[in-house]
Structures are given as C-alpha cells and as structure tokens.
Image 1: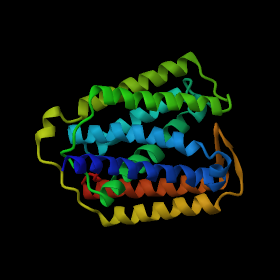
Image 2: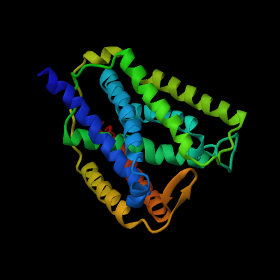
Image 3: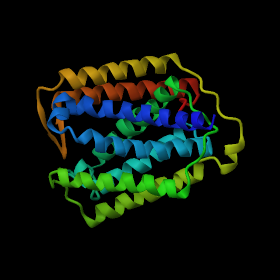
Image 4: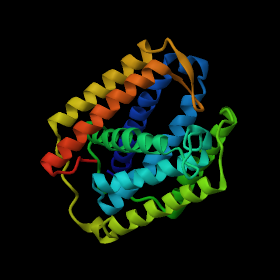
Length: 268
C-alpha cells in the first residue's frame, strides 16, 4: 500500500512533465529534436523538479487553481531571471524588462496551459492520492538545486542577446519577492492538510481542451517545421510559434470564461 501511494504521486508528476515536453516540441518540432537529441533530458529535469515542488505545495496546502497560478508565476520568474537570454531581458525594454514577453509567456503559456491544464490532465488520467507523504526540507533543496542549475546550464547553449541591466535585475527580484509574498498571503494554512481531500470532478469542456491541445501539439511538432529559426535564444519553428500563440490565447480565453461563468476552480 505504501508503494502504491508513492507511485501515484510520481505518476501525476510524470504525466504533467510529459505533457509539457510535448508542448515544448510543438514549437521546437521534430526537427529540433533531431538537431539536439540531448535537450529533452534537460527539459525533463526542469519540468520534473518544478512539478515535484508544485505537487507538494498542492497536497501540503490543498491548493486551488488560483493558488497554483501564483506559485507557477513565481517559478516562471525565477526561470526567466536565471536564463536572461530567454526574452525577458531582450529589447525592447521598459524598466529593464521586456514586459510583453514576461506577461505573455507566463500568463498564457506557463501558468494556465502548461501548469493548470497539465495538472488537470494528469489527474484526469491518474487521480492524485492526497495522502501521499510530503517532501522534506532536503527534498526541496534537491528539487531547487536541479531546477536552478539546469536553468543556468541553458546559458551555455544560448546566444548572448540579452541586455541585462541593474534596473532589470532589481525589477525582476522585486517581482519575485512580491509574487512570493502574495502566495504566502493567500495560500491556505498548514492545517488544511488535515481536512478532507478535495474531490476531483471531471469537466467535459476541459476534457475537450486537453484532447485538442494534445492533438495540436503533435500536429505542430510534425508538420509545422518548415521555417526553423532563433526566436530570442530558442531554436523554434516560426509558423508553429505564430499558430501556437493564437491557439494558446484562444484556449486561455475559453478557460477564463469557463472559470468566471461556472465560479468553480479548475481541478488541479
């Protein structure tokens, strides 16, 4: 029984990690996989460590979707701070930051689709065991070390196109501190751990969105591969990115409309 509980946790983390790898290669394409076959391993480590921490926070504090959005936003800022070539420090800059990249990548791609929808899908396939053990402080250190050092390692593969300024660094640190403060302010207390576990309720609309996203990711990775180029530090397929921006924006708008209309949290 103990082994089953542990494996249930890792199934959720593995599934949401694989969903994110598929999302990555919807933009990088099968051509990107062939060109850099070692990259998926490092991307896997990034996402696996990230979702291990997110999963622990969800179970520890019984988080809802909006709590997860704030936590995800913090980790996104941390990633962008450690990997400046990714676009946040690439002109045009205001207060040392490219705000269009920061807000679009985080509020369209990373938080709602890659994190919230990824977690919904993972739990839809293999429901979370809310009684699994929590990470220790040492486990958290290991996850953070993996996340930070793999992210720093990406610098060696990227072109040096960022213009990091002292003001930009201060602004990014300020955003991370503010996001962390908001999360600490709004997340439930540790006593929530002892309340009854939330019941996972499937949502037909979200099921359709997940099926659509998976199909789109596959088709994009295979067929939208004719115009590979560097977008900031990332070797991406331009058409795949353009279509991906439109599709992702529409999906997030549908998620937002559903959330406002139903007044129910998206199960994570």
